[in-house]
Each structure stands twice: as structure tokens, then as C-alpha cells.
Image (cartoon, rainbow, N blue to C red):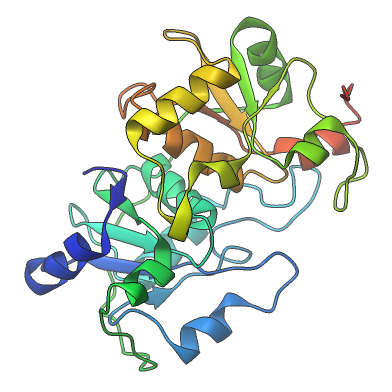
Length: 278
């Protein structure tokens, strides 16, 4: 399954795709909770899954959004109706980064048939497809989480990747350069990392750039073919969209994906590691 799916293709799949699970993962940094948006209006048959409590472990030294305990993740995915071998589509209301986190987690857990809705909830509405405020009872799924199908690194691995390959920082340029840091205790970036802001993966209307456009963008940043490549951000969420964008660009493949530093900058700061600015 391609990592992105258009609203038109999703609408057609919803007509014929028995077992399709649709996950609404809308979320805002600082709130209010995305569940409020879901309860007001969502794509029919979608089930809300919460980033903070279901797609992450509690914050701590491992970061602000550590990878979830496999049992917790399995419970959330089964509640959402995810079944073995069936298709899964995830969407958010922003630039696709939170949906990319869910996409990455599903791939990490062993689900291959998963895609992010291109343009998210706004693109679905703009295409004229129906929405609802009805929260229906979802038949539980039977998906078994088998962690480890996507590569991750710790702080030492991230530092090594920045020296020996390409480590991409998905945060805004001002945070990367260390000019401001509104969330974490240190400003700057991992030494040797290159800046690849996640919001630049999308164009007008919130749709993702084409594969050629993404390939050109990563080339201009300094990503070279056949180099090891990975990504981090503030807490491991928006970095997931870099992993997805690299696959859309054809730089990586499902068989050889980019590496994720899941703890990201929040973990790097908690460990009091060296930082670079500028």
C-alpha cells in the first residue's frame, strides 16, 4: 500500500473495502484535545485514537512522546477495529505529521497496509465527501502488535548517524538554529544534523508534495543516495513525517526505511548531551 492515499481513493475503498479501519488522530500541541474535534465532526466510521495516551507512553527521560508499550498500542488498535491483514488509513487536521506518527507506529508494529490521508480531514471536506458527528460502536479488531519492523536509534545512535550519514531535524528553522526554544530546556540541534522542517513536506491546501518535489527538496538539504538517513524532532512525532516523506520521494523504501530517533530532542536534552547552534 502506498504511504499516501487521496480522499477520492479512500471514499472508493470505504464502499468496497471490508475490514478497512479508519483512525482519526487529530491533535494540537497545548490542546484542546483532538477528541473534541472528532466528536463535533469526523469521517464516517472513523475511530478516535489519542496521541498522548494511546500512541505514546507517559513523558519522562525517554522523551515527551516515547514509543508506547506494545500492549497499550495493541489495545488501542484493536479498539479502533484494526484487523490482521486489513487496510488502515489515518488522518489528522494539520500537515500530516501526527497521522505520520500513527502510520509509523503501525508499520513498526508489523502492519504493512497503512496509509496517511493526503491533505487530512480538510481535504476530505474540500472534496465534498460526507462527515458525521455519530460515534458508532466499532467491532474490535484482532491485530497483534509485533514491534521492531521499523528501525529506531537512541541518542548514541543518532549522534553516530549525524557523523556517518545524514540526520534530519524536522523542527522549525528557528528552533534548529537555537534562536528560540519554547518547549525543551536547551536550544539548538544535535551536532552535525541538517534541518528539514516537516511543514515544508506539504504545499497549498495541505497536500503532500509530489515524489519529484520531495526528492529535489531532500537533495537540496544534503541527502545523498545510498547514505544512511534518519530523522528526529522535538518528541518523535513530526520526525515520523520525515520518514514518510523520504519514502514518498523514493529515497528510502519499505524494505529499507529511514531511521527514527524516537526520543528526539526532548530525550537529548534530558540526557544533557552536547548541542550545536547556528
